[in-house]
Amino acid sequence: MKATAVAHANIALVKYWGKRDEALILPEAGSLSLALDRLQTTTTVELGGDRDSFSLDGRDAAPEEFLRARALLNAAGISQRARIESRNDFPTGAGLASSASGFAALAKAATAAAGLALDDLALSRLARLGSGSAARSVPGGWAVWEDEAARQVFPESHWDVRMVVALCAQGRKKTGSRDGMRATRETSPYHEAWIAQCQQDLPRALRYLGAKDLGLLGALAERNALRMHADALAADPPLIYWEPATIGCLKALQQLREDSIQAFATIDAGPHVVALCEARDAALVGKALGTVGGVRDVLICAPAGGARLL
Ligand code: 2P0
Image (cartoon, rainbow, N blue to C red; front, side, top):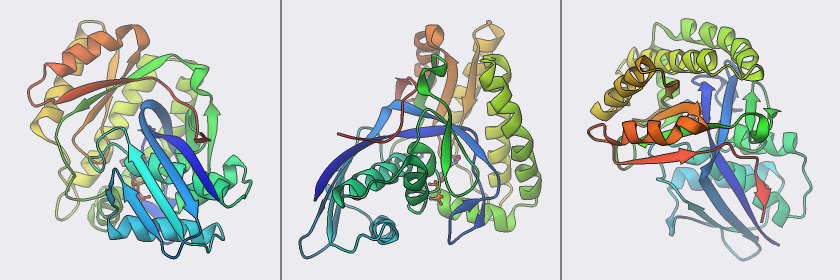
């Protein structure tokens, strides 16, 4: 009746920004991500007792998170009350995809606690009901999510790249991804073009990933992220997720490329910049981003696998 699971956050190179079904959490276009070793959530679920509880990093989870967790348990057919304890080893709610690792770990731990043996596809489908991007943290490695569940397209061992995370602000962002992508879809005049772009980008990105072509994959991922933000900036009211340090990091990566270091940016619905580079360049890239004004910390992450029980 009790189980603990670990899952890693993932960062998308072709991004998910728009739902075709709000209730079922189905994406308008496919996305591609990599799970990261140092962005990890550990969740324990104990069933039984007389009420639900959900603590996140030692505090009561927000009501919305609580409702999403209960909806996920209900969808798995778990009617017993649950005590959920979850810990992130990275900043929560700051645009570092903590909901992805969080709901993937919850799906894994809760179903194990209930004695249910779900395969990865069924587990991914379940995690998706907590948060769309959580579908990709279940299989881990390089994952594609297009419909009800995400699947791993290459294992974490496929390619020894790094993602260097530059933390460009502290604290929670003002507009979460769920509200942000809905507002963008409803009000940005560029949204249709954005979705068409993702439909072109995903098959190309998979080809470049298969060929381990960092120059092509990185450039595609950077364009994809900037176009997602162009779409969000065009919403009414506009969604400005960046801080000055975000621009500083983009410029620092441009300079590195002029100096023949291959490093490319992606940015989620928050201010932080994540740079994709070869393992051998990661320390240099980390140093360059660490000296940008306003950058608070730099985390060098390697590819990670899927959700697993401890
Ligand atoms: C992604 N993001 O592909 C994109 C890029 C943020 C920017 O997936 O409403 O928290 O729970 O499905 O999963 C974050 O969105 O949103 C996200 P819901 P979610 O990684």
